[in-house]
Image 1 (cartoon, rainbow, N blue to C red):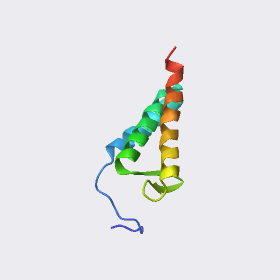
Image 2: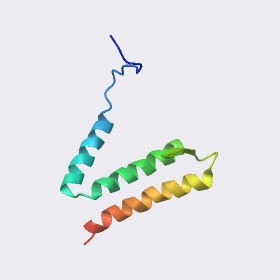
Image 3: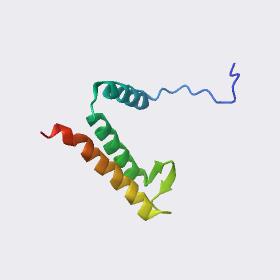
Length: 87
């Protein structure tokens, strides 16, 4: 019986669980490339779905300038995350 007001979801979100594990291990090991991969993933999904989230939802159709600033920010942050590995 569900005693909370939250619905019970039966699907397991493997990608989210994997990302959480990578964030945890990457933080302990000092791997900044993990953040680079996540930032690139976020930028890619933002471009595909034409919306992003930074504190609140931002859609390309309603706020195109702010949308692209956030997406470009994810891409730039990913590049900075890979810099320590370029030698």
